[in-house]
Image 1: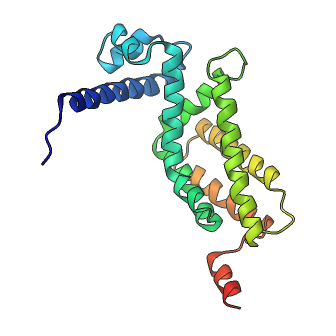
Image 2 (image 1 turned 135 degrees about the vertical axis):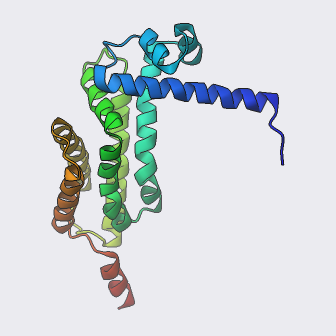
Image 3 (image 1 turned 90 degrees about the horizontal axis):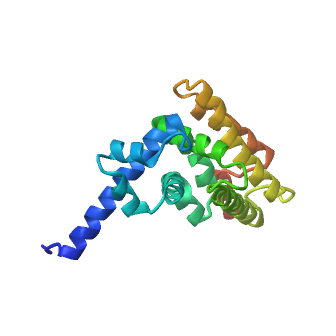
Length: 216
């Protein structure tokens, strides 16, 4: 059994404190927005001083970017394995998991929408981050669609860039509508309906269909 060194212990404790601050900011900003909530309030929720928050993040702008990154990290953890495998049928079947995660962590979902609203204007600290985020999400979705098109898993005529943009627009729009009236299971149902209909539109082959095609 290895013994934790002093340096390792300090690093672990530092990471734990940073996470406590992130969790406090997420909880507060999801309901009050970041503009109306100062670092002193975040510090109080995290059980530490204002100076302590500054020690870990340096500024409110840095904390805001870290919160956005944390939300995206949790979101990516759901679908990233399927993007990595570039298997569109697995990805398609797991899209509703994003909706289930949003229903489970409604505060985090609400935070995402609030921060988007606050970051629309170019002079906001989160504006560039969100520009890059949406570009990356669209690009990786387009890439897996293009791979599927090359493999014959979707129709050859599919405009992959347009479908990728459509998927991103649906996910955000469905989330906003659900947050205004968060009925249990409703967001998941909307995802299942949408991706089921879109699968028909792009002629997505199921795993069974691909196996039969490969056997011929």
